[in-house]
Length: 400
Image (cartoon, rainbow, N blue to C red; front, side):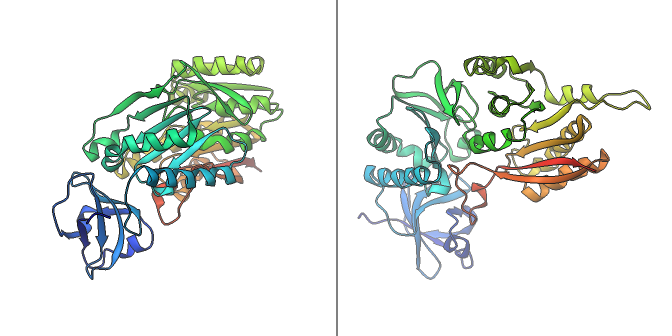
C-alpha cells in the first residue's frame, strides 16, 4: 500500500472520531506530515501518533477529512464494490421484497458523500464530497458490476457541493433512460422523472411510513398537504379513505399525482389542487369575529419540505411549523388524526414535538400521541452520527 500523508489531530480532538463519527473538522487538525492534494486518501492519527483511520482529504472544506475506515485502506474498484455489496445486504435483510430503495446512505454506510438510490432497474447517484467525486468512475464501475442497471443517472445538484469546491453535476451517465420510470412502492405505481424530481426522484425515506399512515385513513376524509407525487394520498386512497384531497404548490407534481392516481385506479376517490399550502390553510381557517372554522377533515397529513438550510434558520422554521399545525388543527373534526413530519436534522424530534404542542395549546386542542415515525430502514441511522437521523414524525388524535 502506498505511503499516506498523515493528518495529526490536536489534543482532545480524537474522542469523537474514536466513538465513530467520520468527520474531521478543519479546526481539529494540528498539522499534516506532508502536503496532500484535495481528494487524496490520507491517514488520521491523534497527537500521540495512534492511528484513527483513513479517508478523503479536502483543504477547501470545513470537513478536512471524511473517514472511510478505522484502518488504512486502498481505494479502488474492489473497495467500492465490497462496500456497496455490504450496504445492499443490509437492505435485502431489512426491506425484503422492496424493488426501489436506497442502496447507499452516505455516512450511515461508511461512504461519506455518496448516495445511491435504486429505482427498479435504474440507479440514481448523488455525490456531495470532493473525494467521492474524484473516484466517480470507480463507483460507476462497481455499480455496473453489482446491478447491471438499465441506466445510471447523476443527481449531484445539491447546494452542499459548493462547500467542497464542486460545481453541480446532473444528467444521464450511461444506459438507456426512459422518459418516465415506473417505480413500485408497496405495490403502488409512481410515474417518476428521475432527472427532475425532488432529491433523486422520490421520497424513498417515507416508503414504510406511507404504508403505516394509510392504516389510519380507512373510511376518512383525508387532507394531504405538500402531497408531491401522491405518496401518502394514494396509499390512503387504496386503504379505503372516503376521499383524499391533495395539495402541492408544484403544478408538475400535481399533474404527476393525477396520472399516478389514474394509473393505480384511485382517481375516483382523489382530488387535487395546485396551491400554496400556507395560503390555503390560512384561507380555510379565516373567520369573522365570533365565528369558528368548521372542521372538515378526519385525517390531515403534513409532510412539508425542509424549512431549514442551517442552524441559523431554525427559529424561522419553527414559526412556519407552528403556523401550519395551528391551521391544520382548526380543520380537524373531533377525534380526528393529525400526522406530521419534519425532515430537517437541525430540528430534533423533541423540538419538533414541542412546536406541535405549542400550536395545539394556541388552538385549545388536546392531543393524544398514537405513533412516532422515522425514516425507512433503507436509510439506516448510526446514533453516533446525528446527521444520519433527520426524518421524524408523529401521529396524534384529538383527545377529549
